[in-house]
Length: 228
Ligand SMILES: NC(=O)c1ccc[n+]([C@@H]2O[C@H](COP(=O)([O-])OP(=O)(O)OC[C@H]3O[C@@H](n4cnc5c(N)ncnc54)[C@H](OP(=O)(O)O)[C@@H]3O)[C@@H](O)[C@H]2O)c1
Image (cartoon, rainbow, N blue to C red; front, side):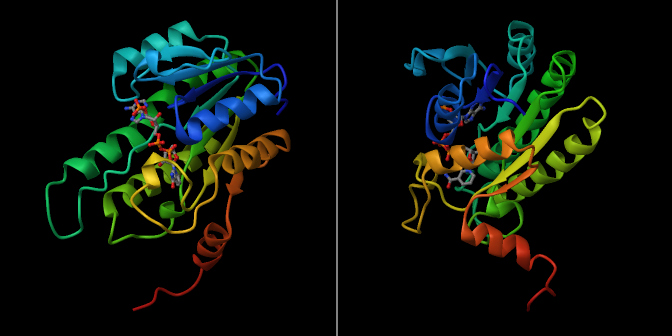
């Protein structure tokens, strides 16, 4: 897809990977980038067009779609960790929130914008996924399940929007240097690296982005027998 001249909407574009996506789009000549965020005042970059959007609030999703009918590209980036839900202890609140935002939020935004993308020539829908989409994690089972669900949804959207000509891309990353991964000292790649690799995929109509070595290894290992 041609990025130059495109009109993009990025959820959670005020910080982290979402902001890197927004800057990469501007750098490649996007005509307009909506920063779709819970609090429009949190967007200080004058190159971006702030738009109120909590992806879990149906009225805000509908209002964003009504306000941004010119969009040709949607990046579902908004997400949370839900890390406070442990495997064998504690309430399910964090895991439920991760499912609401990462999975149902992505689904709600995709539904609302699919007809807009169709009207505007097909365009692209990009979902920010994870290595955890494919790796069960006893240390953050709620997050991993939400990312597995979001990956499944990405496949359904790819098939379901094929006829309308929408390119659906899944972007998988291990740890990325942002607030969300601040709990670990594990090796991380930069948000800018994730954004650049995604721009390359967009420009070359590739449907999957495996941003780091660990993610490539995990994807490769999926066909192996399950270990005890
Ligand atoms: N960092 C990593 O290691 C890593 C690795 C793989 C995938 N990812 C994925 O990358 C995406 C971005 O994460 P990040 O690392 O950039 O995290 P981050 O720095 O914590 O940013 C999260 C973003 O999501 C927004 N958000 C949260 N709930 C929202 C809601 N209900 N509606 C709208 N926006 C909401 C936040 O907005 P507020 O500012 O209002 O809170 C913020 O803009 C997530 O989907 C995450 O799962 C991250």
